[in-house]
Image (cartoon, rainbow, N blue to C red; front, side, top):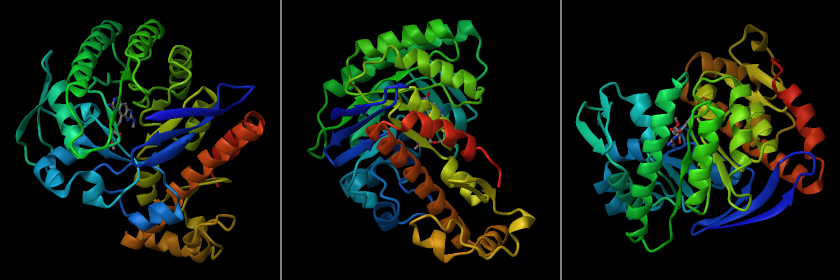
Length: 376
Ligand SMILES: CNc1nc2c(CC[C@H]3O[C@@H](OC)[C@H](OC)[C@@H]3O)c3nc(N)[nH]c(=O)c3cc2[nH]1
């Protein structure tokens, strides 16, 4: 996977670049719609490509391993063939899900045993078998098996945890580098920096991750409930150490404001369930601020969802109609709101990229973060 830096902001650490994968190119900064179980919830493939110009989507090892199962995905010829998305895919390793979705789990040096949240069956994830699983899924970018520490987390626990995450990373690299792609195209492994909210642990983890010299690097263990200032402080510490010429992926982030602030801190790639999950509950992100469409004030507002947007459904449907759909829990409500939010997130990072290239990012970012936080 090749990464070319195209522009760097002079007033911040923001940068614009392009990643080249076996399934196409990705222009950064980029937002990656989350398609946990092999689908971006409520969105059709042609909408992802044509309406919101998504460039890469996410899948998740934990979910896909449990359902539909690796046999189905392998028989299909990999996830791209299975869900018909012939552009780049990134899969997370499942480490986070094992901690966030399962009750009964044990973390050992060997790996993590857990019970499926689907049918209670028992499973073991190890650095080795999670690499094999991601080979079978066939994502272009795969993530190392790590421990995402909770927030808050004792310093002593976080210190022990990064050492295990680093030992697991070595096992991931050994396994990945000694196996071949199954479907004939190259895959890339990203390691993940941990260290909770402790500056010295973040520095140590970033140095160890950088020393593996992989083609891209991720920052984990954030967006787990810590205050935004802590997230920004840790990101700043880590981006000062991760190599400038490799893409940086901040996992699970975030709100539109989080994304702009972290672009300014040198992050290139983002993923978050907020645009789709919150859409289903009626929370719309717009260039003028946040709309809670369920609010009484939109009851007879027949103006378009977002008149300035170039998305057909933003102009075609009214706020009053979408409010009715969401309150009635109509499927169309989830579809319209999810497409709107994803379109907005992709528009926002595209705007950031263009401003970085034309040298106006910093002033634009400082104005936008005020506007985007407004409740309309
Ligand atoms: C939300 N905040 C957050 N997400 C995070 C994720 C992805 C969640 C993954 O789960 C699914 O979304 C819930 C997505 O999977 C498609 C995402 O990639 C993380 N993954 C790993 N391996 N390590 C981390 O330290 C980590 C931290 C996170 N913080």
